[in-house]
Image 1: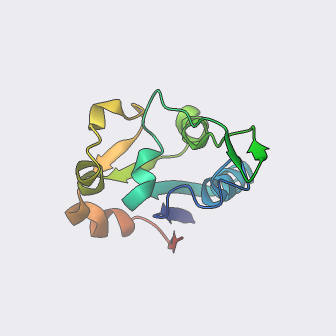
Image 2: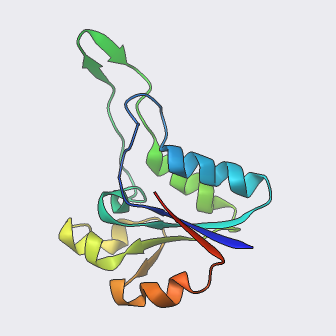
Length: 127
């Protein structure tokens, strides 16, 4: 069974955790043997941009010294070549992100191509 996880809300819960919960569960599913891919859209298209980092912050005197590394999560996810990561081209354009700044393993798809992409999966989970 092929599964596609769609992530739209970028940096959800990353103040409490050091990773994106949907990307984390996608890793877990793949490591458990699932055939799972990721589609990043809306604010989440920033995840696979190379050479970025988040600096630690302090809120109300409490420091968060382990900043989120969602880029690293995406890099690890595509690193072994068994899963695919897609980003929506129009969402990159809306945010001024040059596709050449993305990890080379990430595939850019136009919004009009999404029905064809989605049809390749048995289940699509949109978070």
